[in-house]
Amino acid sequence: MAAPVVSSISPNQGPMSGGNTVTLTGTGFSGATAVRFGGIAAISFTILGSTKILAVVPAGAGAVNVTVTTSEGTSAQTVTYTYVAAPSLSSLSPDQGPVSGGIVVTLTGANLSSATAVRFDAIAALSFTVVSATQISAVAPVHAAAAAAVTVTTAGGTSNSLTFSYVVAPSVTGLTPAQGPASGGTVVTLTGTNLSGATAVRFDGIAAPTFTVVSATEISAVTPVHAAGAAAVTVTTPGGISNPENPSMYFYYAAVPSLVSVTPTSGTTAGGTVVTITGTSLSGATAVDFDGIAATSFTVASSTAMTAVTPAHAAGTAAITVTTPGGTGNPLTYDYYDTPTLSTLTPDLGPTYAGNTVTLTGTSLTTTTDVRFGGAAASFTVLSPTEVTAVAPAGPAGPVSVTVVTTAGVSNGLTYTRVAGPGI
Image 1: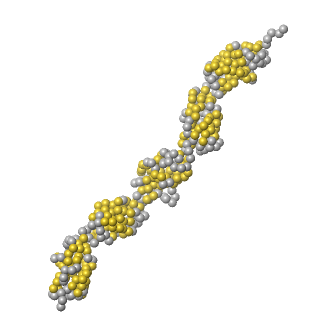
Image 2 (image 1 turned 180 degrees about the vertical axis):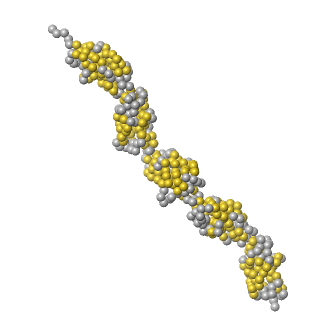
Image 3 (image 1 turned 90 degrees about the vertical axis):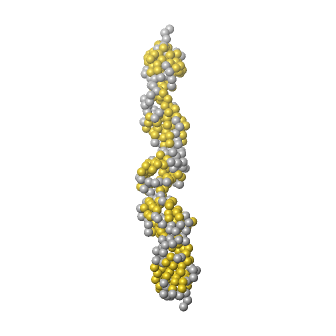
């Protein structure tokens, strides 16, 4: 009879703590009295025949020779079994992701070289790659929304677990306001669900300059610059991207309105004057203001013209502005004047023929556009806000009412009497 021969061992590596079962194949195993790993006896062994033994590995370290002893002797030390240090994990990056899985997670730790499995709870990673002894790249599997214990299994055993949080994808259901200027800068409130932990808010793929997660159902974001038109608004969290198939839409308007002219340029402090405003990008106007006071009403005729009814305002200059969803345009100047009043005519008598110069005194006469003697227009000169001279037109003998017309209205009337010349 010959001494036993060990030709192979499977598996040929295992944890330093031992306790795993290995299969030895060879010859001459009948009647085996000992199986040793290095100089340490197997915890137990079972002879399955002259060519096979099952042995429970004792604790150990490093690479050791495996021998079998029978009454015929001990096998030569030619088969090696390697003790492998147990793997350990120190970090996951990222440590959260969508319930749909598919996210690549980097596991960092020690003794990861011989990894045979990466699990999220009991669910195997979709795939994994051993990058080095300290790093593994794994693709997270599908998992319910919850914390999952991530472990790595190697020949050295199963590692400690680290937590990976599965998060439900966000959903955006509303935007307020839902429109604004192409220049951006509008603060928009996004409402929805699962918005906590947002890492990005995008308008057609363009990142919002800033955003604040107010709660799990609300985000405040500043719109970026964008061409005119509709933009899909999405929120990205560790749970994924919000409703990518049916995103909420934000509408960008082409341009801030630009004002060119207002006609007339002045009117009464009582308001009620219809003015025509010309410019560009006036479509969709939401407000016309005179020094912040809303126009009584306004009508947009086209993108370049609109009319507005002036509100009451104190005497002075007011800034006219037009606001559209694109923003508030440059201001135009509109002057408010009090209604003119007349206090004296000098002289208040004159001939029936034309040519007599009359001095009218009063208030708010600066914008005089007409001086009338009855129904007849007179030539005139504005000397100051309180004085106008006029050349009385020809007319029949008798009294007529003299009035002054300004952009603010018609004055009270004063009496001028034409006197017929002496007869011969």
